[in-house]
Image (cartoon, rainbow, N blue to C red):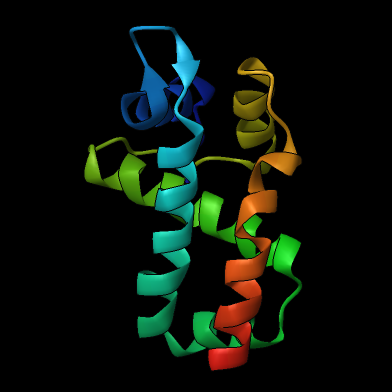
Length: 114
């Protein structure tokens, strides 16, 4: 499937951009990434095993990719995101992988549950 950075940024902004201050809504972002793991990954045996056995950083990044691709599909874009596009998106809002740190404890708890 093809990829398009503009599409990726558009759908992510539609969810996470606070247009009042032109900043990323980090709390809402983290809620959505956690929900992607907690809800979606629970219903898929392969993803469940991935959460149980995977590294936390990989789990979080995979959830970001899956969430983005889900909303691209939901909004009828015929594209998928790339890891580089997601890195660029975070960088555009002066964020990096450390944005996920507040979720580490929650993911550890989920890993123990699975």
